[in-house]
Every structure is written in C-alpha cells, then in structure tokens.
Length: 127
Image (tube, rainbow, N blue to C red; front, side, top):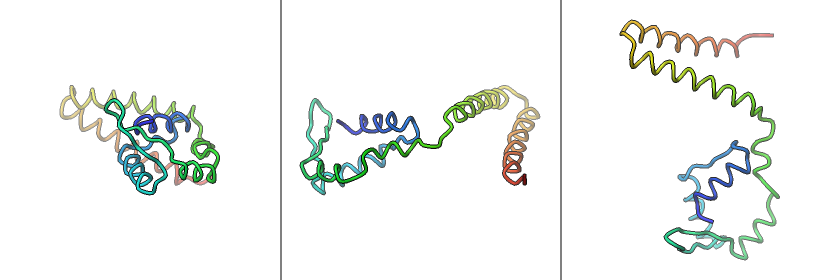
C-alpha cells in the first residue's frame, strides 16, 4: 500500500474523523522503515510499503483497531448540518464581497464579525 492509500484508508476507517496529512504520514513511514518495522519497494513508479516480521509482531501487540476510537461520540449529522450552513454562508459572503458596493462589503464583514461574537456568547451563557 502506498502513502496516499493509507491516508484514504485511515479516513474511511475513522468515518472521516481523522484524515492525516501527507506531511505527517510520510515522515512516519520513513521512521518506521528506519526502525525496521516496514519495508518499501518501488512498483510501477509508486513506493509501496509492507510490514516486516518485526512490524507484524509490534502491530499484534498494540491496540486492535485504533481508528475505532477516533469517531466515537461525534454527532456526524450535526457536523454535516454545520458544514452545509457554513458552505451557504461562504457562498453568500463571496457574492457580497465580489459584487457588492463598498458599503455592502462593509456590512457583510460586520455581519460576520457579529456572528462570531454571538457564537462565543453562546458558550458564555449560564443555564
């Protein structure tokens, strides 16, 4: 499996809760190779990695499936709703900023600033 496949696989196994960046995966793979836990070989222009015997032993001694922990307790439906709302706001503010007058752009920025303040005030409220 090559590095990008690993990134994709981790993302899928965690239900999208964790998708490591190439900047964290490739140095980790280099370190694991230096420690003798994986080996790499070039196949069709891609660098493929596989566990060594020592790597298998180490993997078997660790957690059974660490990615199961990554997505626990997350309300994915709420996250999706927020993502859609943010996308709609992003679209609207881009339109205001690219086609609006100077006064409209200033009002749009003021709305965003006010929204940020109101969101923090929600956290400050006492029940």
